Image (tube, rainbow, N blue to C red; front, side, top):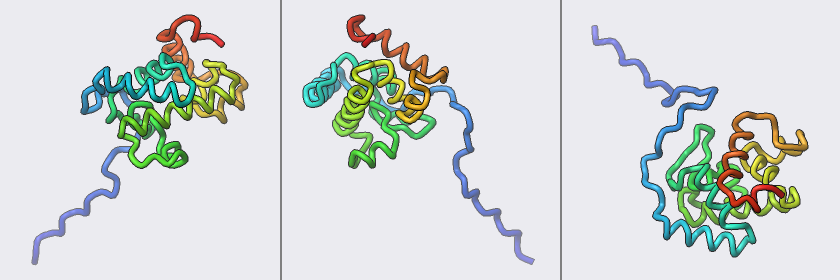
Length: 162
């Protein structure tokens, strides 16, 4: 009689999570301010998006940490979803330059779509344009409402409202 076979390792290595898990600090330091400012200014100039808005989104999304990953799978400084990265041809969503460039392009598209209504653009960045279009307003999703309010509170008052 040989010994009993060892049980096979589980197929799933991470438990399934239905609800948000508490935020934990990503295992990297925030990008140095000078480096982040350069990327923000480049994106602002190229896309015509105000640098304060880009900075506020980065601060809210990742705290400036390029290795951040959300519980939903969003990645990098501006928390790009994998589908967004693929759509924009991003090779490395954790590369600060690619991430800020793409996140800023997406913000510009949303600002254009919603006729420079910052609230709607931010809501779409967070919850998706389909949900904003369906509701015709910032969706009644507590996370999205908090997201929009938190970012608008970081903006100069002339930028916060359309």
